[in-house]
Image (tube, rainbow, N blue to C red; front, side, top):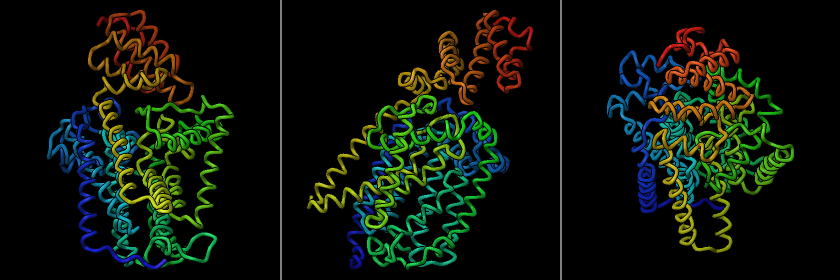
Length: 531
C-alpha cells in the first residue's frame, strides 16, 4: 500500500476544530456532576475529612501527600491535585467534581489527537475517543471524587502516548525521557498502569508499524504507519522499553507493600476456586456491558460463590475464543489484534488473578484504559466493513453520531445516581437487595444524618447477607459493631449488649471491635449507658 499523503492544513484545522468540539461535548455531558455531593464511599478519607487536603497547598501537606497511603493506594499526585483544588476553588464538592470533568475531557481530546497522528485517520480516531469518553462506564471514574486518581492517571497516560508518538517519529534520549516522566506521573497518580510498556509494544505493531508482524517477515507498516516511523526489530523495541518495565516492577512492588493487608485477604479467595472463576465472569461482563451498559452500580459482589461449573466453563470458552481471534487477526488484521489485545492486557491487573483488587468482583472504573483498545478494534473493523460495502462516509458518520448520542444519554441518566448517599445506595440496593456492602454503607449514612431508626433494618440485612469470605467478614463485623453503637444511642441496652457480645465472639481483635468497645466505654458497662 503506498504511503498516504500528509493531511493538508485545512484538514488539520478541521480536525482540530472537531477535537475541540468533542472536548466541549464531553464537558457538557459530565457537567451535571458538579451538582453531586460527597458520598460515604472513600470520599471522606480522600477529601471531605482529610485535613491534608482541606488545608490546601503547604509544605507540610505536600510532604504528607508523598508519604501517606490511603486505602492501600500510594497516589501523591492525586492528593496534590486535591490540594490545588482546595487552594484555588475551595473545599465544596462541586470544586473537585469540576476538576474531574475538565481532566477527563482533556484526556479525551489528547487521545483523539494522538490516535489521529498515529493512524492518519482523524475521523475514526475521533470516533474512538468519543465512544471512550462518553460511555456510561466512565461515570464512576469521573463523577466519584475519590476516583480522581483514575482520571489523573489516565490523563498522564494520554500525555505519555503523545510523547511516545513524537519519540517514534524521531527517536532521541530527550524524547524518551519525556515518555519516562509521563509514565512516572501516571503511576504517581495511580499505580495500576504498570501495563503501559506492553501497551506501547502493541502500538509499535500497529498503528506505528515499527516492528514486524508475528509469524511473518513483513512489517506492519503497510497497514497504517505510512512510512512515518522508522522500523526497528522486536529486540530493539523491547530493549528500549526496559527502563519502563523497570518502573512498572518498582511500582508493582510498592503497591504490594502498600496493599499488604488487602493482599492477605486473598487467602479467603483461593485462585482456582474463587479468583479465577470470578475473573472469567468479569471479563465476559466487561465485554457485554460495553455493548449494553445497563444495571450499572458502584459495587458488584464477588461472583465465584454463585457460579455453576457450566457457567465457569462458558466464560472460559469466551476468553479462549477471544484469544483465538487475536491470534488469527495478528497476521491479516493488525488493528483488530492490537485493539483486542490492548483490552486484555490493560484489564489484566484488575481481574484479581494475581491479587484481589478490593472487595468487589468487578467495577465500572476498571474499563477506563481497556476500553480504548476495544473501541479501537470496533471502529476500525466496522469502518472497513462499511467501506467494503461502499457505505457513504456521511452515513458512517451519522451512525457514529447516533451511537455516541445514545451513550451520552445513558451517561446523563447514570450521573444523578451519584448525587448523594441518599441516591447512590438506594439505587444500589434496588438493583441488588442482597448486597451487604451497600446495606452497610447506607446504614452508616443514615446514622451520620441521625436517622437512627431507619438504619437498623439495613444493618440487620447486611449481617444476614454477608458472605463467608474476607469481604463478607468485613461487612459483618463492621455492621455488628455499628449496630451495637446504634442500639446504645437508642437506649436499647439489651440489644446493644447482645450485638457487642456477638462482635467480640466473631473477632475480638478486629479494629472495628476495639473501636466499638472504646466508644461504648468497656466490655461490661458500655451497653448500659443511656443515650
